[in-house]
Length: 251
Image (cartoon, rainbow, N blue to C red; front, top):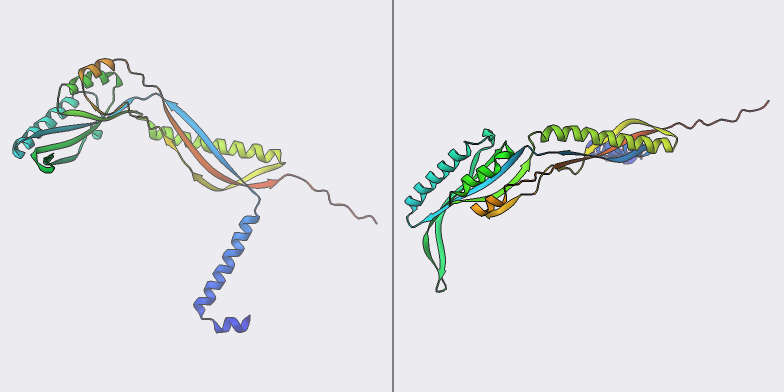
């Protein structure tokens, strides 16, 4: 072995040493008595805000006219939205596009005017204002809804507390399992957050056109509850509590 090492370059010798030490470390870790559990926790909360995403779309023959009209419509929609209790920081205008419209005519694609689009998103802080805002927006023919869904302003805090509850659940599980085997828990070895449900709520409506009839039918809203679920993976060291009696030698 010594003669072989002498023939190796210092780089290869260092690599072999590193691999040897790593294998010993891995083997030692595998020999450490440990217990692995999955902890779960769920929190339910009543939504206190509604996230909106609406689309402004208008069309016309002349691009300049379409652009001017679009700017006015977007401005009116924003002024209307700001009259309600919204989170100002959530108000955004995105995906602003315009372009040429075309259609098929006698197996050919031909020019059919121009279009302009803008997406507006915001969070309504007062869920009781839902129907009133709906009615106001439905009066603008160029406005349609992309999505509306419930949310909670305390989601981050709830996720944090639910995560701690999941850790407590993992510890309780591990303690019960260890006690059944006459053992006790030591320090945690690994902790990892797994799949979570962050309280997302299915959209109430999607890709629907505003209409007075739909607004009338939405007068009674059932907000239900958002469910926040957190899951963690934890490994603990395991200490045996069994006392072995060594036989004493007789003289």
